[in-house]
Length: 247
Image (cartoon, rainbow, N blue to C red):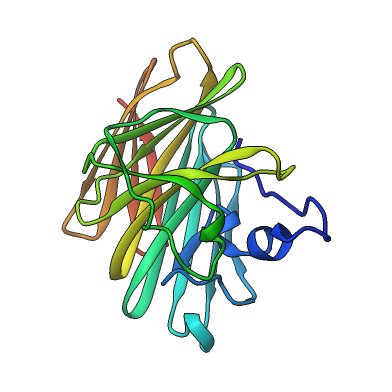
């Protein structure tokens, strides 16, 4: 459901203006510019604990992204994934967390047209039907692809905005849904929970709640059909902890 598009054909204009631009990937953009080439590194890969985790990091010391560092953790249990992505910049920048999903966005809070919000040398020119979601917190989005649904819970971020639209899929004649969470800052930590489920049935995750402690730890409570699960993630993404209710 979350796809890397690849290349539909080298001879079409979209190859350079979309498929080779950063906005065509589920990652992060700074100041509406595509990421320069860089060498990332794997920071964690663990599968033997009660949950699995993979982590990566990248940073730039020159060009448009000079002074930018990104770190990401994907944590997963049997029924859901937790995504934690942190961006640090040397000075305040526009930071866009970008997510793509096949199919249609079918459940979202109130929407308002925002056609001029996604601009930049990154592929945004190929995103249409751009709308702003007005709800400030406790955000939940749902997509449907045939008989499968994907529910996305987003952690509260009061000073951020959320935009959605449509963009070329692969093949280019088809469309996918794009969501962009935007914050202007020197530091941003984007937290989200992804829950795949059978459309028409109750998703295995019923809710997600966040809090932020004084010791720079993000606390997440996941409510499932069988009880609650707790996560603690350090803001620098160097440490994680999980427990089930009563354990």
